[in-house]
Length: 299
Ligand code: PRT
Ligand code: ZN
Image 1 (cartoon, rainbow, N blue to C red):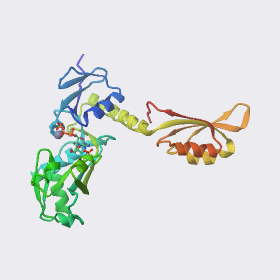
Image 2: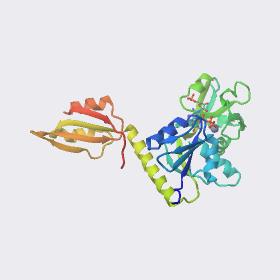
Image 3: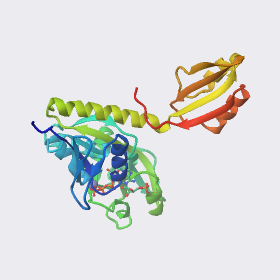
Image 4: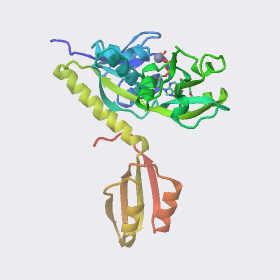
């Protein structure tokens, strides 16, 4: 029998996206066997292998069809897209889905004591970055001419070293900026991880597995915030209670044996349930309220 074709997915080898990427795959049911320092992880229960690489290499590996899929930051693919466009080429990888991890923003930041009153203050300045194309595009769209100083890292110390007047770098908590006495002034790009795919048509078996994976990713992302809530309530309070349940479309209402005016309400809530919501439910007449985590969900 012919061997089943295996999908190859590129994941960052060691960095901020590694753990959340592997966590997502594990939640999608993938069991990966990987020897220490091995570049390739073997999917034991799915025809899917994981290639561990530097995040910057992922867009090329996917558009050159070395890998079928990749998990990478939007910042990396958008920079790549602009870099290719500058050379008259077109990016050939395709974004399949945004993911709920790797959140950060590419921002401009000025030394804390530096005055700033709008993008025109950037005119003629030297800006250090590892994202020259995204920054160039941002400036060009606003008609600003500035000098882009392209660095390969340690951007945040460039102003102190006199290499630039300000910086354009990724920010998540803002603590790096704060530690370097820099003040965030503009957002160039809001970023998060993205699942990308090859431009090449996939064989039917591979396509089926990509679709299954996407459905599972969907399920994993949905259950993150979702909870299952169960409660008892007087039938007369149903309208008020339905109104209070966050992000639930049609709760199940069940009659309670021996209590004709009371019902049990079960609902999937697709938003976080706060203590305030539970208190409001109680005030509306609910009792025996239970909130349960949901492990898996398939729409
Ligand atoms: O070795 P390799 O090339 O694979 O890794 P890398 O060093 O290029 O990437 P890595 O692991 O730092 O980041 C991988 C991806 O994570 C990025 O491309 C983003 O999509 C995403 N991401 C999310 C971030 C951050 N948050 C982030 N905070 N990437 C980098 N940072 C850096 C930022 O450059 C700055 O130095 O963290 C610092 C700021 O963080 P805060 O929390 O102090 O604001
Ligand atoms: Zn990198």
